[in-house]
Image 1 (cartoon, one colour):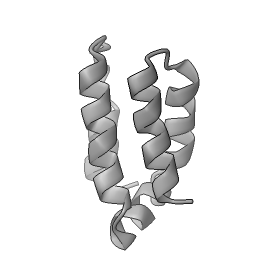
Image 2: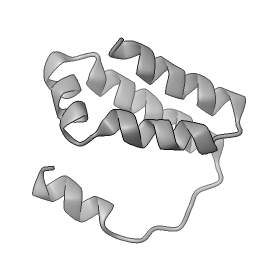
Image 3: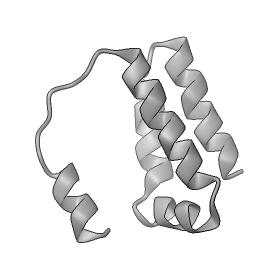
Image 4: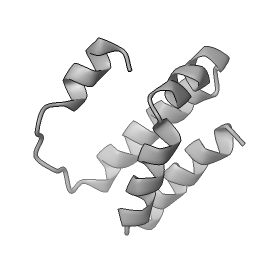
Length: 75
């Protein structure tokens, strides 16, 4: 994992309960993964596993759709 990304992910953060923010974040991940280099980087940080855990805990239907959009970009 790139040091810059690992450093950011290591900090404790307060959870956000706003589904719109989660949808926007997932749409951003989608835009990254539709590019070949972005998809390789996504896989290098174990992105699919991280998203699977998030999807399993998600309850909002719109956010779940956004997760599915991202998953569809690499299949």
